[in-house]
Length: 208
Ligand SMILES: [Zn+2]
Image (cartoon, rainbow, N blue to C red; front, side):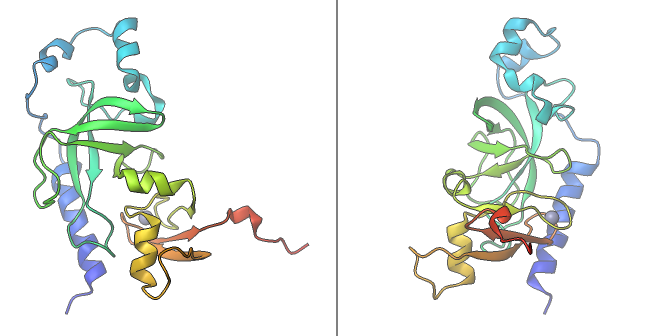
């Protein structure tokens, strides 16, 4: 029987290889605003209305002809909580909430049953080496209460699951209102190791 985790990442690489590493087909024309935004020189007004276009965190990621469209890793959770594989989907950025981007799915995911074309999603773009990735409201709420040491292989600084959901899955005997001091999890992108801690890592007493 194949190792489930290995299978997950193998599938992820297949999915992302198909949609991500070959020259992408342009996103579908589904809105009238596209014809307006396409090939129109940037003005200060349009930059103010679309601040993400000049956001350094998204530099180089937008489709050359569609300045609000980029590829985002969408998912329904990490490998511990779902067998559905992440997919790389074209997303149109439609807003920002602080450092969180709001986007709309331009394509129908192949095998993610809870997401469909035109759904709005939230996503983050934290490191230049990881593609932007979907985050949930629940994850964002909990994110500030935990400290995540990035993946030891790819540097992924976030989880695909809310820490409380991960904790409940890994430690089913721990009451839901209790918080583990620290635990490890598999990186949802590459299978490396991430460390999740309820206290800052620099609070660990030093040896002197
Ligand atoms: Zn990783």
